[in-house]
Structure formats: structure tokens, C-alpha cells
Image (cartoon, rainbow, N blue to C red):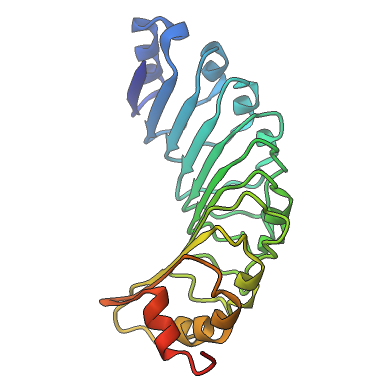
Length: 236
């Protein structure tokens, strides 16, 4: 059962009382006021949780042992993601928040297969993702990191999406990606001076990516397939 709750006051959580909590496997919370997440431990069969809005304390989520998918979307502050450590997540989506931690990471989750990180201000170094050996799909959007990670340990990687990663100083790390992976790079902008040209960076590493079946580059209205890029590459 899927339950959606718009939280404008703590009393709105009482909406859960109208359901058998054992039947709730998906919960979407749209939070507009300060609220405790302690009630979450009552949802013994919760598989998927969306938290949209600011929460002061995420630690009660560590009790959600059955949860496999978590989305946190907030303009607030998240200073630690250690509460994830005891979970068996397969999908994790993080969006929009900042942190007082200078270089935010999250603990190694052996079951994690799908990761999306969008606009999280303090994830500056992606090297910690090299330890997620089960990862199959990675999507990165508008992060301030200057380099990618070594993809060699990620033997299960099937798809990489990079969107508006303007700060990347190169794409040489793509040469380490799983041969069966698909790469999608997209940038869209208006009146923005781009210091790091993704097409130029991709053409530099392209000779080492010939074994990949799918490479797609989109810059505003321009789209380039792998074949288009090979024709443009001086090294081919």
C-alpha cells in the first residue's frame, strides 16, 4: 500500500492511524513543518520512503530494516548520513541539501545498486563511491566535484548519467568504466560561460571508450551519439 501525507503540523502524521501500518510498504512525506520521524519505526514492512522537506533528525530511519529505497529531497541541512549504515538499501536518492560537514559522504552499503545525487552542496569528492561494488546505476546532477571516480572496482556498473556537472575538469576517469556500461552526459544552460567543455573533454578520452556501445552527449539542443563523436575525434 502507498500512503502520501502532506505534513503541515505534527497532527497530520495521525493520518497513518487510518491504515493498517503492516500494509504500508511505500510512504511519501511532504513536510512543511518541523516533525519527528520516530513514528517511522512502527512501519515494519516499509520498503520505499520519500522525505520531501526539512527534518532535523533522520536517525529514526536507522530502524527501517525492511526499507530498500530512500529519497531525501530538502533545501535544509543534513550533517551526517551515518543513519544509513544499518540499512539494506538498493536505491538511494539525495537531492538539494547542504551540510556543515566539509566533505559529506555516506557509509558503504553492500546492497546499493542505484544512486542519484542531485545538487548536494558538500559532496565534493566522489572517491568514496568506489567502495560500492554492487552499484549498477549512478546519476550525478549539479555537483561541485572537480573529478569523477575510478570506476574499475564497480564491475556491475550498467549506466552512468552526468547532468550539468559544470565543475568537472576532465572526463579521463571514464576510461575505467565497465565495458558494458552506457554513458549519458547532458548539459543545459542559458547565458552561462562554460569553463570546461564537455565535448572537448569527451573527445580526448573517446579512443579509450570505443568498446562501449552507448555514449550520448547533449548540450542544450545539440545531440551527439557515439558515432557522431567518433567522426569528430581527430584520433579516429
